[in-house]
Image 1: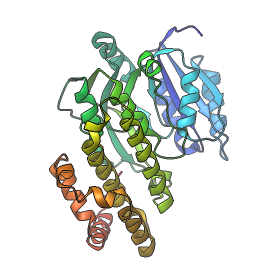
Image 2 (image 1 turned 30 degrees about the horizontal axis):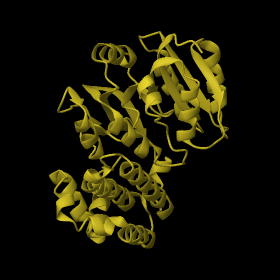
Image 3 (image 1 turned 120 degrees about the vertical axis):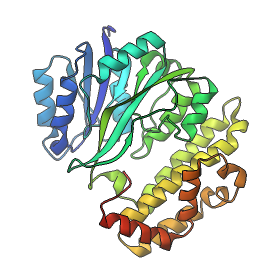
Image 4 (image 1 turned 90 degrees about the vertical axis):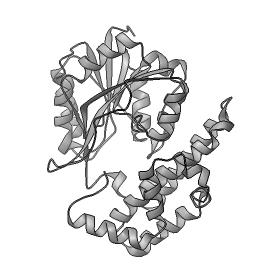
Length: 335
């Protein structure tokens, strides 16, 4: 395939009829026209396919591929294998982007030679309320090992894949692909990106809007959901252990692990309806590596103060549940 496009935008599509048109309109309205849009449609029960057909018929740079319902990771890999762009951007089908995203970030990628560029994002409810925003970054550039260390702690370099545009050759050279699982696929992908990257840049401006849906799978917290997360974190640990300098990152991984899991314990406190099921989730996590890692002071010392406070509160599930019930009354919720 000829590599004649600057950016390939890959969009997994599955049962998103209510949100898909806004997403695809935001992509079709990009000021940079030298892009291709790859829609990977997984067989759905709604009218998502009709919307995909409409956009691929109307816009010559939209291409429609058919997936096999193996999850977003598999869909992104499939789209990547058919991409012709020099750079890769991932957009979730219920989210939307600013019209100048591609043109602005392309300029930085070409001038800097960066492996990937990070940009701002926000998390928005169906009613338009913004729950959280990541707008400012502490650095304009990072090099070498600093990228991995920042990425492990979600310090400027977030685990999500959709507030970045990647250099395609960098992903190919380092064999970076998504694990083909139903949940948490961003974890291992983002860790490999941060580990292998030698140069990244930051743009302190919001270009990406992530929709927080009440019916989202990521809000359906259960022990099964948490078990999938633990499995991915363990795969991540295996990857780090196989690197030449893996042993020196052991405490850093543990800090990353407890930071990640404590956030999902908070989500459980918000979203698990039954008290018994919530306590079951808490005990399930407590019996994992999390229970031993949080006892290691040198590990917790690697985390910022805010994360240490979060972990402390997670040790008291009744208090955490009370706090979240108060926050829900004033419509404050984790994204």
